[in-house]
Image (cartoon, rainbow, N blue to C red):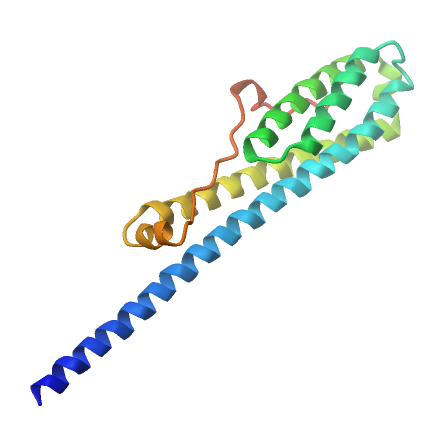
Length: 186
């Protein structure tokens, strides 16, 4: 009779272990998928901003035709952002675009009639709104990465994370000079 009790205890233990393992595995999958979703949200906002750039350039070009270098730099930075693949490439391209947008808005400050242009003001408003969304999306992404990375590092989920090749995700970091939102108010 005691053999059956020991066998029963072992079976119950194995069932509990299996349920625990499945729960941790599913938690890791869910966290990894939330990181992917958060990254997608950043990409949506970065693409939205990149889509606004050509219209903004065309509007400013109408008033400041001789500022060709600024337009080329903004276009190049936008292309870099659109071609970025990794988190770090996106962060670097985002920093470059932010810097070039500052130059573009500095040029626009020299043209009062441009600052009064309704199309330009609408583009500014949309860009400012998009910058806010990018900041929120970046924060949400980094919070999600933190939770996922903690699961990959903390016991006991780290055992399964290693076993099933879950790798930590990169944070979306920007350099200090790019932390300021481009000024879009005139």
